[in-house]
Structures are given as structure tokens and as C-alpha cells.
Length: 52
Figure: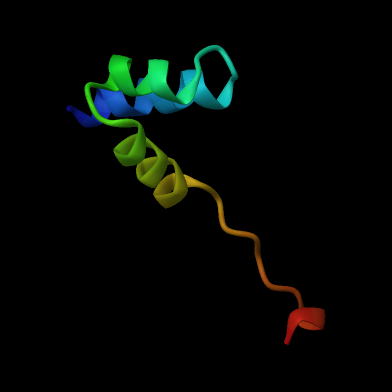
């Protein structure tokens, strides 16, 4: 599992080109690992002053 293959798999998954399982196969990892990577690289919403 290389970072480039995982990044490609995440891109295809987010574009809804592949299912999570298919993207994991492309990325050379398990679906759970790919899902964890997707969460790690997902943008976090910024806090507004109303959130505080």
C-alpha cells in the first residue's frame, strides 16, 4: 500500500467511480484501512463564533 495508490483510490471512491471495496482493492489495502484514511484526509469544518 503506497500513499499514491491510496490517494488514487480515495479520489475514485469520493468521485463515486468505485465502491469502497473496489477502491480498497485498487489501493492495496482493506476497506477499513481505506475508510480510516478517508476520514484522516477529510476536511474538517471550521468553527464559527456561534459554535463557541
